[in-house]
Image (cartoon, rainbow, N blue to C red; front, side, top):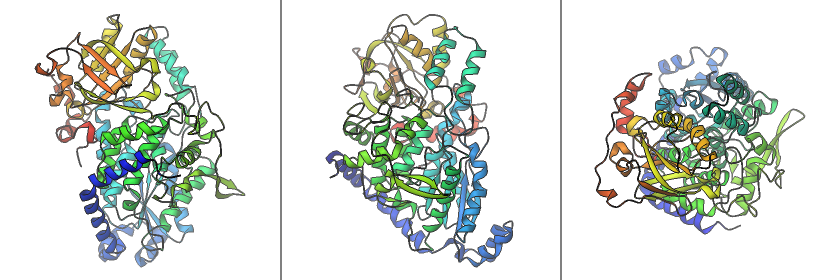
Length: 601
């Protein structure tokens, strides 16, 4: 199937826009690769320090003839998605030994759980933890003793931060190893119902806790299609996982086999062998276009509209919001996974999963088929699925058809003809909406504004019974420069209650929403942010606002709006406590949401 003209045009546009930065990036990669295996340039003292605790592997490491694999881990046992990584280093070392190589834990990186910090002060560190993870990974790899690296990470900011660092070490081959989703628990829609009942006082905290614990009940990724699982999709579409690795449950024989195979594959693609695949060549313009198409086809998390530009810039690739918009217009929505539907990711995987979807999009000419991946050349490899046969890991042809069209559909009969995200722009600035989770009749909201400077004030107004008519709730001074751009997901039950009462309601904010957010139309990442004097700082209570996710517009319908002075906010309360004072430099240096809200690139 020939490549879709729009996909080809967007790719060409990105390539032209990135010509200088990508060219310089590849030059640096080639120079680093040309220096040969890193350990050859270390002094004997350097190497002795590096190998001192390696026991029986010391002689092999000192000889320098076999590859040494670096392990960068985001393990902790507070974050359910990352708890399974506790076992991975031993699995990887065993696999490395079987391949005649060695492996070392290069370092650990932080991994915070947005589910724990939702609505809490710690959420103001969440976005910038991505940059910290990139920096920490760079420190881990700076020892320069590794011929390849495997990256253990799943969740929201962790994978983007790891990608940014992997791209900085462009000459080092990289394989990403996921842990997989937890098994299905309490259905996500039932959990959401209990949250709404708690918000209205219909049930107590005991019932809410019972529902939450039944939903988040074991090791693995949360089963809704939020940012963590969107990350896993991206890693397959961009060729950084082994095919079919994303949604295999933790602590199963197949997951362990995939972990071992990923380690062995990383060792097979070093500069010491005959199939050298530096990560800088995998992360090219085509890979990022494929990732965006996957984002649109799955109705993935809006957070990736922030992360992908930062990830790409680390590899010398310049993405713009117009690229997302153009690809969304030609990419059909093929999946309905909560919050876009009732199914979870385990149901999606059972229906045919990413292998079926990649095959459909390849056949429709919507993906670049000729990308370089860690598994080999060509994205067709990712239409296959892993199986254990007599204890051996094999890949076989995946599902040729969807096994559940309520969850996963072919490109010929999609859930909707266009992608899951919509760019909005107008007199309020530029934002984005996850339309795949919003009912068609709610995609245009025209109503009077209520303006707030924090999410708790919205909840106070709700409890006081102040929302009695159609309303556009404006929550501003939530951008990266103001307070770190926290997710405002804790507003979802409140706004959903108003919507279920028959009110037309929308959210407009320069902050973020969780990848789990849906149902209520939300124009988020509004840029320029209020703290930078953006138009959202001019909105007053009672202004008529039109949020139109059909036409892609975001406007205040009041004369003289552009001539008003901008409001100011006292942000001193966001500057201290729970480590926030240490992140002041990130708030000062963060770029706009349109380029990834990044403080280090």
